Structures are given as C-alpha cells and as structure tokens.
Length: 83
Image (tube, rainbow, N blue to C red; front, side):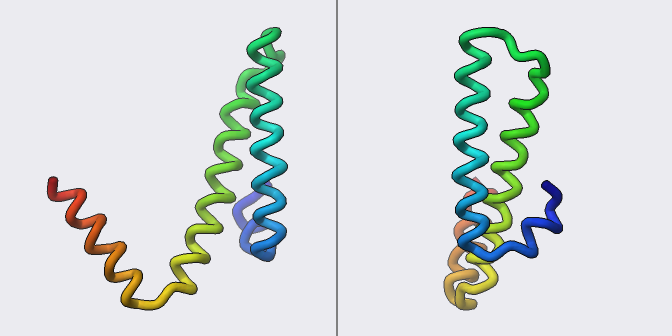
C-alpha cells in the first residue's frame, strides 16, 4: 500500500492492517526458514509496510497529544542526541 492510503484510513483500520501485516511477515519468515522463498525481497517489503503503518499511527498520536507532552518528547530526544 501507499502512504497516502494509510493517511485515509481510520485508526481502527490501521490497527487491523498492522496486525494483518505482522501476521503476513511472520508467515514469510516461517516459510523462509523451512524452504527458500522465490522472492526474498518480500521480507524487506513486509518490514517496510509494518514500519509505514506504525509511523502513521505514531504521527497521529503525536498530533493528538498536548503541547506539554510533545515538549517532553522533544526534550528527551534532544538529551539523547547530546549523550
């Protein structure tokens, strides 16, 4: 799926899509451990799709959070970078 498709989905749809993508990824890993896959790029594509979905969910969480929470997150990230 495309990132624009994820932006149009509701949070419940994203959660359902995430669980389906994780199950698909686990199945790919299982099948790959038993016998070689025809296209091993499918593993990479599955990981990236999961990351896209999680990124969209996280961006919505941050958008809905208050400014105080966002300030705390930014301060923590700045502190981690300076270490």
